[in-house]
Length: 78
Image 1 (cartoon, helix red, strand yellow):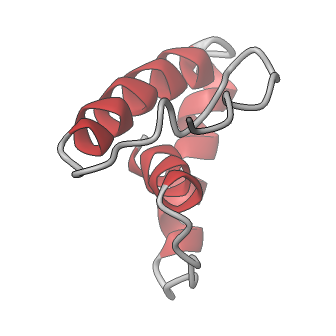
Image 2 (image 1 turned 30 degrees about the vertical axis):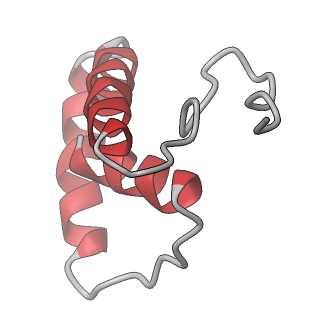
């Protein structure tokens, strides 16, 4: 789900996210998907996290991770 990846990237790169007019429609589509498959959010979040980690790895001083899925905050930079 691209919206999850975008949210992860914005958080990891400290970018302020500004909703676009079509975000609600896109998220509405995913609500339909999730209604049919309660586990789809976990698959989407996992794939979004992998994509974000890859993109952050391209940064000159990449953060360790944009999101810690276990709820723990990311480690402090050295």
